[in-house]
Length: 237
Ligand code: SAH
Image 1 (cartoon, rainbow, N blue to C red):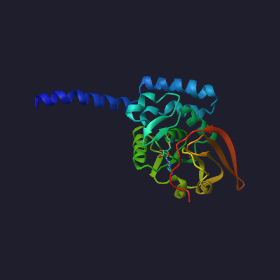
Image 2: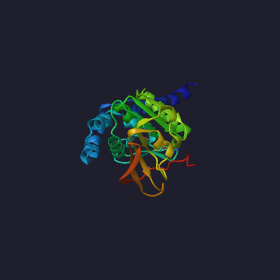
Image 3: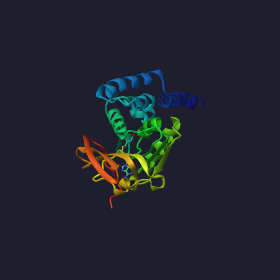
Image 4: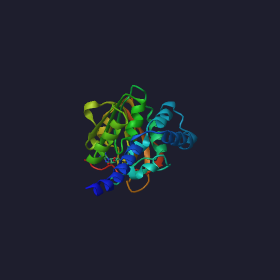
């Protein structure tokens, strides 16, 4: 008996240590974020003060599974399980800046994944909705957002192709998975004067990040830059 307890003790310490690393924001993680914003975000031309503040504020490491958390502030996407990834920090900042989120905006994200992009949006505005198709990731995103204190985000497990009609129209819609075409239900749920940002194209090749605007009832699209996202599954009537 005594022998067993001795053996279990280090295991307990190890697990507790790993948990605290992920659950806490420390001087070290804050510093890593300052450096991330300076070198990857501001240096590449992101200027919106709301976006820069949000990128400095959100503890990105808390949204990444333990075994990958040490890569949280690297200049690249990071695996989050289920074949999915959390986007590269610059891509998150760029898409958020282009979407032009105001503090009173109602925003819909498709592809909650880790919950990180939703947290960045929630730093800027009061009302964020996010949809995730993989049940385990929907639960993960909801738990991470709660742990990090973002109670202004609603997470739903569903097929985001159809949007979230109940809360429409949205000032901004951000799709974080590549779609072969722009889902018509999302265009319908975009507010007049609103902006949607979505990667469009073949999921296994380079896609184009597209800005969709609705002005005077007219829908316009504008190609922004080539990107590489995981595919938007489901939907597609
Ligand atoms: N925004 C995320 C990263 C997204 S990765 C973050 O900040 O971490 C793309 C996510 O879109 C994956 O989690 C994938 O499961 C999800 N996804 C793919 N197709 C979807 C669909 N039809 N509806 C909702 N989510 C979808």
